[in-house]
Length: 311
Image 1 (cartoon, rainbow, N blue to C red):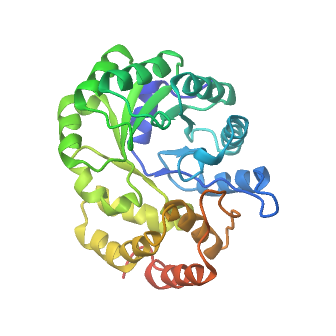
Image 2 (tube, helix red, strand yellow; image 1 turned 90 degrees about the vertical axis):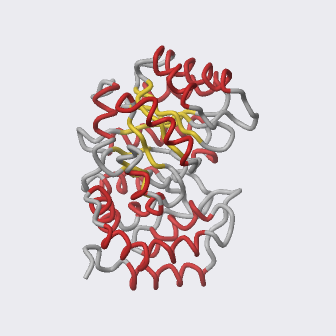
C-alpha cells in the first residue's frame, strides 16, 4: 500500500528533482540483473530526490515484459528507503494499462506514470476515456504523460481532473509552449507539472515560468551531484550557473545524444559505465554507443562536469 495519498505524492514530486533509473541487464543474455538494480536504487536514493520512476522510458519500459516490469518495480520499492516515492509505468492499450496499474499496486508503488496508448492515434475524447479508465481502476496517484500520439489539450486534462481526483499531474514530452501555457493557465495548482523532454535540463529554466517545478533528469543516473546542482540553480533562477552547465556539459552531451535515434537512453547507460556504475547494455531495438563515442563521453564528463558546483 502506498505511503502517500495522491495529493501528498503530487506535492512531494513537485518539490524536488526526479530520477528515472536505468534498468540493469546482464551482458550475456540481456536478462534483468536484479541485484545490480537494487544496489543502484539504494545509491540514487542517498541523494535528495522528489521521486524515482522505476521502469520508465530511461528504464526501457518498452523492452520489458509485463512480468519483468512488475519485478523491476517490486525491486525498486523494496530497495528504496522509506519515504522515497516509487512510481511505476502503465501503458499500451487501456485494458493493458489497467493491468499494469494493478500490478503496481501489488508491488507497493506509490504512483503511476501513464504512457501514451500503443501505436494508434486517438481523439481527445478517446484520450480522456483512456486516462479516466486507468485512474478509476487504481487508488494510486496518476501522472498523464503527453508525447507522441497522446497530445492532451487543456480541456481534456481539465475534464479528467474533474472526475478523477487521483489524476495528480501532467508530464510534458511534447515541447509545445502554447499548449503548456494553456494547460497551466487552465489547471494551475491542481496539477504537478513535470518536464519530460529528452535531456530536460535544456528546457528547465524557461519551463519553470510555466509552473513546471520539476523534471526527469536522465543525467542524474550517472552524475547525481551535477544534476542536483543544476536543479538548484534552476529553482533559484541562477542564470549564470545554468548557462555555465549548459555550455560546459549539457549542450555537448546533447550533440552526442543526437547522433543516432534511441541514444537518449543509450547515452545514459554509457554514462553509467563511464562513471564506474555499469548497468549492462541496452536491449534491442536500441543500440549502445560505440567504443569511440563512449570514450568521447568519458572525456566530456571529466572536462565539463567534474566540478558540479561550478568555478
